[in-house]
Image (cartoon, rainbow, N blue to C red; front, side, top):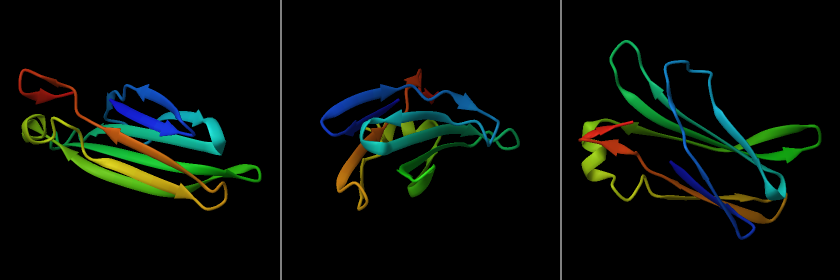
Length: 112
């Protein structure tokens, strides 16, 4: 689950697990921002990762301005109850900030 805030507007997005490294959950947001996220479950070793990408619109395309990656495992359910931390991304082009925080949704000690 990710909470995204830009220009005073908050949005919540549920990010589903996938074993496809190219499948992203993407949302176009107010102010020319785009936010994409993925919970990648490696089919080989079962390791999970939360990957996030923030873009701003430039001419006829979106330009990546921030990327992050956090490991998700059974320990994440205990140590990251409040999320993986607040991320703040500033777009110099738009002179505004997008902030987001994501956390693992845990069921009986495992992340999902």
